[in-house]
Image (tube, helix red, strand yellow):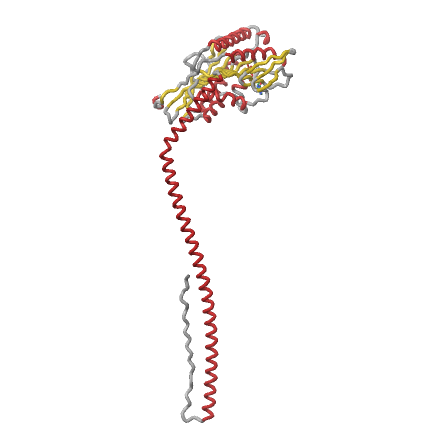
Length: 428
Ligand SMILES: Nc1ncnc2c1ncn2[C@@H]1O[C@H](COP(=O)(O)OP(=O)(O)OP(=O)(O)O)[C@@H](O)[C@H]1O
């Protein structure tokens, strides 16, 4: 307890006493004594009042003192509490510093663990792809308002209903007319992603004219397909590698038995029909695509040919580099928008069209033979068979689905990864 010293108040009483005047009359002496007494009473009264005032002041000071004493107690408590909190915070700070130090020390080890886990997942993932078969065949049905000859029974089965008969086809995935570009991209993503792991990947679209091959592969600006822009953007966002490079982009249009020389970005080509462009940024790729498409339109108009009369091949070389393991991997992503697969009789082709149609059918037959004979060991392949659900297209649809089924029976050899230790990028 803290009691400050009380103020000491000293009160002195001074009462003036008048001595009797020598030789003065008795009456005078009496009245002067009375005056003196009265004066003394007045002084006493004044002093009493002063005393009372001082007593009040003392009371006030006492009250103020006890208030201050309480305040001191309270503030002492607050200071004690704050000191305790400060000590606790200081201890926490030390503990956190220790934790950060130990995490920093363990960081390389954690990165190693993470890298190992990622590699393990990739291995399992690519093994799974191998087990599923390196060729995946997807069926996509175009939208149509006409009466339909197709029934999608489940995610992997489609039935063609024609003249009362029902023919079933199984695929790795069947996309109904209501499937979006996003759904389709999600289906191809596992295959596309393996390109970053150093596998060669090929995506093809096969089907009759107007069945949605270009829509699936390239799409439109609003609804991009499994095309370059989308692939590039999404490959980049899905890349688990420290760095991902797009090395070169090749575009090739094959018309009849010759390949067409399309100049991209004004560069002449060293190999007929093949344009080789160094791609440094994603914007470069889009420019290449846009320029290529523009040049293709000009060339095709001049030569009076339609997109459906030629095969379009776009190949993209990708290099991924893993900063932790120091490995680099190279993969090639090839996108093929094949020429229309319709029969000659259907298109009633004649003259040059007939020659084209014959060449197309020959090349598509060759493609089927290539798939059957292929024992290539460095490729993951994803093929879209695009079909029209229109009843009038039932024969073409049957033929396309039959082609897809045959391709699906083919199992490619085990795909191999193109991985090499990192080298100095500047020397490339
Ligand atoms: N799933 C779909 N959803 C909406 N529209 C589609 C779909 N598939 C195709 N289309 C539309 O149908 C039309 C024909 O499609 P597309 O040009 O892709 O066919 P194609 O098979 O490439 O033809 P061709 O062999 O003549 O080049 C286009 O206008 C396209 O936008």
